[in-house]
Structures are given as C-alpha cells and as structure tokens.
Length: 408
Image (tube, rainbow, N blue to C red; front, top):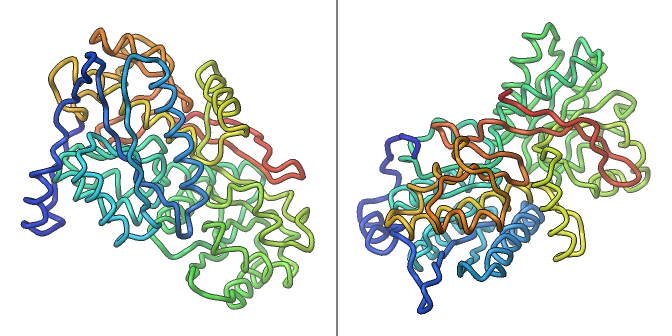
C-alpha cells in the first residue's frame, strides 16, 4: 500500500459514522466456500460525463460478469450515480460504504474524486479510478486508499507538447477550460512546449458555463500561431468550434486533449461540415497491443456487441484488480487494499483476467496483465507505465495514429 497520510476532510461525526459501517474488512465466503467480493461502482449516469460513465460502467460490469462465469468467485457490483456532481457523489459514496462494499471503482471526474477521496480514505475503503487525471491526486494525502489506472494529466500535457513540436510547429496558441481538469494539462503543456523550444503566442482560459466564446476566439485569431491546442470537455466546447469556424480558424492545425475523444464530436461541434475537423489530432489515454487487450476487446464485442468506449479499458482493469485483491484478501485474512500490490506485482505470475482467479485462490502473487498493459502502481497510486494514443477524427470515427508507452 502506498504511504500517504489521511487528511481530516469531513467532520468528525461523519467520519465516526462511516467508520462504523465502512471498514473494508476481509472478503466473506458463500455457503459452498466460494469467496464473495462486494464492490461498488461510483460512476456518472447523469451530468456532463454521463457518456463516459456509461462506457466505464459497461466495462466494470463485464469484468464482474466474466469473474462470476468462472464459478470460482461470487462478485457483486453495487452501482451508484455520481451525477458528475460532488454533492451527489458524496451521498452516493456514503451509500456504497454503508452497504459494506470492499472497494470502489470510480470516479471519472477529477472534481468528484477530490470531493470523495477523504470519505473513502477515512472509511478505509479503497477507490480505483479509471480516469480522474488531475496531478492533484498524485500528491493527495489519501492514506494509500486512492489508485487510478489512467495516468496523471501532467503526463498528457507533456505528450501533447511533444506531438505539437514534432509536427513542426514552432509556436502555438492554447485555449483551455478553467477547471481542475483543464488547467493542469495546460500548465504542463506550456512548460514542456517551451522547454522544447516552442513559443506560446497566447494562453487563454475559458468558462465552461459561457454560452458564446467570441472573445476567446478573437484572441486566437489575433495570433499567427500555426497550431491551436484546445483542452476541454466535449459537451461544453462545441460552441467554441462554431465561433472558430466563423473566424476562419479551422484552417490552422488543431490539437486536443482526451476530453474530445469521441467519434461524435465533429458532428456535434460542426454539423454543417464535420469533415472540417478531420485534420484535428489528439492525445488520449490508450491501450497497448497484445494478448490481454485483444482478449478484452473480443469479450466486449461478444457481450456488448460493440467496441469499448473511452476509458473502458481502464475501468475493466480497475475492476479486475479489485476482484483479485478481494480474493487474495479472503485467502490471507487481510483487507482488499492490502492485496492490491500483490496482484500488480511485476515479480508475480503473469496472468490475464479469468486465468488469474485460480492463482489468486492459491495465494500467489500476480502480475496482472490487463487491457491497459501490465499494471503496476507507484507510491502515489499512479500507473508506472502509462499508455497514450495519438488519434485523429475521420469519416470512420477515430483513427489511432500512434501508441506511446511512458515510463520506459
């Protein structure tokens, strides 16, 4: 377990009440001796990130279904809607903890994760987020109860800077959403791009609640930057594209963060001519090629009849890691959080999904090989080898141009 102290972020009475019902404890056995693991999913089914919540919940449920089909473990997944809203999420996570979940998969919103991590930590219930990419969470005092299978957005900002520079752009203008998702990416992009020798012609923040972005796009138009970097979220940024189109800015090369990684965005943002966005390129959390990722994609297609969505691979891995840690906890008489390191041990036995269950039942240390690659966490609960994809919009949806593995 990574070592970080716990902040007193919720009131003493609230902590006491949660601790009475929420300590993770060891897993239990069914009447036939089958280990039972109870997990919670804290993911948005409503709000701005509902689409992302849907894709991650599908993957989490798939992992649970596959584990249960093995017949060697009984996994229950209790789902609560985080609403893409801190107040809703705080109530939801207290419900999960009160119901005795041993681990939580979620959330996908940095704002939500920051609002509930103290509750999880002080209740001694681990969270494993498939997204929540803010660098704030790397150094957060969570007592070792927060992990994530997606890399910090600071790494995304650096990868994006390298992409813009490698494409031959010696200057760029940046337009980023003013929140704790967008600004860390903007800051690390600017720092990394300038270190490479690039010049920032404009660094502009925007309010996601605004209805028009004429002032922001006018500032972009006033620059000569050949590259424009847009950091934001799909639902709140479509209007920017329309304003930019009216100023002729789509003739420049645009780059994006992972908030726009949706095949539907060109049509949503510019219904009159989606193809105008087919030159746009982005950086997003990706998955390496290999047997484990192929198995995940095949299982997703077979069970859900479609390809996995954004951050689905990260949610799938987070769920499997908690399932396997729960099994080991039952075998060893420990808590689920204590076994996360033992199922993501690079010195352990390498295994994929269902084949890991028998090894966990035997008490072996595992090197879980997941949809996102061989998962290993650093002392902050961040993945050691983050994977990114360079992608581009196209008539077919999203086209992956390159896969980049960090930490190597």
